[in-house]
Length: 550
Image 1 (cartoon, rainbow, N blue to C red):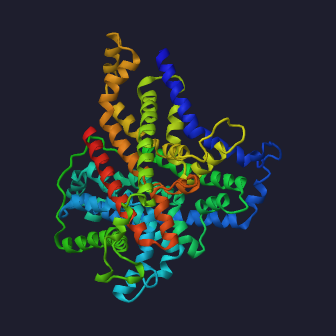
Image 2 (cartoon, rainbow, N blue to C red):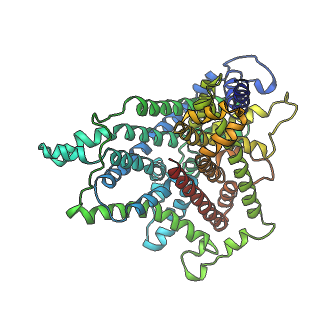
Image 3 (cartoon, helix red, strand yellow):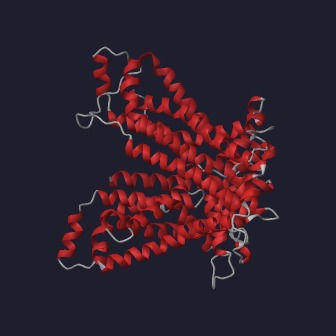
């Protein structure tokens, strides 16, 4: 029991540094506006000036409206496509699943930059077809559509997997009893999938209000401000406003946590279930005369959500100059060659990102393993606190984590600080991505019998030896899958990199972003292509490992 208490203490200490400390300083800065000067005077002094500003209400309205709009777009695409995938026999269904996974795995800021190249005046769309959609793209509607195309796979997979798990036998029974196909779907199939639909839409809403890259790329030109971009500006533009950034961060956290806890409540407490055990899968129905229209619908969605942004990105990466357009003489692999030149800043950025991603995978994986064991197996003191702190980052937007780390470590009383070094990036990535190993490993532990660890302890094994020889090997496939996911996401993280990267340190995301700002779009898109290939490969490997571990 003493060893378990030591593990609990180590885990709580790590979570305190990674999660509680930055979030605590956001709260303190919001309450005490002069905290940076070492003064505790005038508590809540910045509340009135921040929330009486009409711009704050506009930011809140834009953020809420964008989140709701993205959820609606995701619903309009994800629900019908997911239902068709589950209920009917489609050609090569695994291919559609793979294609629809790509928009979710594609970093939204890279998708936004690709859409800009395609739809802006004199962009690829105008070069090929003679018109552009720049007016639509650089608007709140354009932002919603771009983010909706990235978020709809969440709903698609939630709906399709939920309906496939429920099977078609109950629907067939309703048909036998005289129900029309629509009534059978509306009264039987749809209610069984409602919890998954509601949870996925709330997740789409949360991801939309937390997104920074798309609003920064499109909203700045459209004059549409969001909470995420406003928070970043209050710390990046002079005069800096830490109290205002902290207050807006708390507003954003409240919105995200409300949606997150609502999602968990829906999944945990309002599930529909059958009364005769697990429903049999049944047979998927034939599409009949709808075969061609449904295939066209899936194909058109894949073209718009996957094909166009990837084609735009690849075209830019293979162009000598963007102004040269889509012409054979303008095609070249020079941008890729430049990236891999020794001493080039691109290869340095690639090496920095991969090193940080590897460190993040190790740190988040280690802390996540201990946290998952403490909550599910250890029955240690403070397990509830460990559970809450380890899952809190799931509801924390990246910009808020960045703000918290700036406020926490940019204080004069620390004898040493990671601020201004690459360690601050490691802390930010690990905080944001900690829920991956906690969830994956926790799910694995719940499938492992307590008797295995108990048997090892009865035969004289210490707790450390039991963890090393029993718990770790049995949960290793899930842990490796989670670490691969962490590596992939950390290698392309944008907002905390922009906020926290010290002078002279570039990551993949910063390189891509700055190349686009400076007009070197070809090199930026070449780096984006490499980043996506690495990210997709690792994520797919992680998902494959996780499926084998279940």
